[in-house]
Length: 376
Image 1 (cartoon, one colour):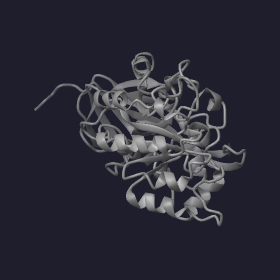
Image 2 (cartoon, one colour; image 1 turned 180 degrees about the vertical axis):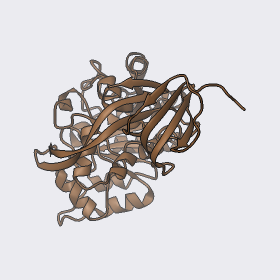
Image 3 (cartoon, one colour; image 1 turned 60 degrees about the horizontal axis):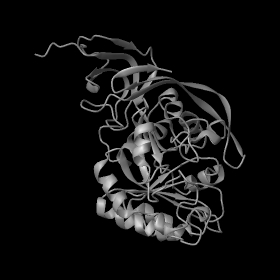
Image 4 (cartoon, helix red, strand yellow; image 1 turned 90 degrees about the horizontal axis):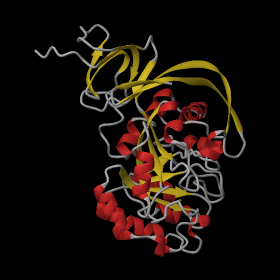
């Protein structure tokens, strides 16, 4: 029998793990940055070197924010990764296209390798990404297919390709950049992460190009040409895309979350797969604030606590194709978030200035990041 002591034993936590279905009071063992065991309440616990007593707080897999902009002081928008990451209970952030093939190595050196938070990337199909402006696809000559292919094939931090499909981004090229990106993504077997907004391009045309595993972000924006038709019904192209296995991501952002669109879609049986923020410095002080705040909004809009936790843990891990994240089971990386859930009224504002009142709030206490405890 192996009598070696665990590096860390976490006790008295209320575990919620959507992957295993475990829910209740468990202890969790950590060794060498990975989960060594999950022990029910009456189990005989192994020896340990360090103890973390959660005193009844919730513990879940580490929260994942699938849509952020963390090329701080480099791209035209950005914020420090740790500010919206581990300091807010988020163990993994995914930068959504701030860098492209032209500047990813700079992003890797200055952001990914310096952050305590795990930083992943949706690589922008435009070589410049957002380092040189916000209309990165107005000229399709900005796409370097071979350089993009080489980077994605060699850098595990890159989980797929980001394409922004708003008129201000593409100008007259319409879906041309998306078609190039889709061909490349299919060759490399990685997903597309597609921003939708002001049309043209028309949302239906965008959705028709997407396949199983691709992700649409900003799906519940309140701008013209969104996910509802003129009669307020869900677009048939959206229903068909969901049936094909296309994922829906919130991507709150400065202008991309409408409470009306969210509620209307949910009433018709359509909800987001993942909750993300699209955080950068200009929306950090409102209306977005944090992933925690965005999760609270989603509960106020009718998502259950379990749905919300699934949408920031298991579902994003599946969308990233990273089974080592998003679950608390032996062998998974020891990334976990611990927090308390409290009752109390709170007013929330969407991207259009509309208000709702919620009654459930989350108070983040800290994280375990690859086995190390970091208090907030």
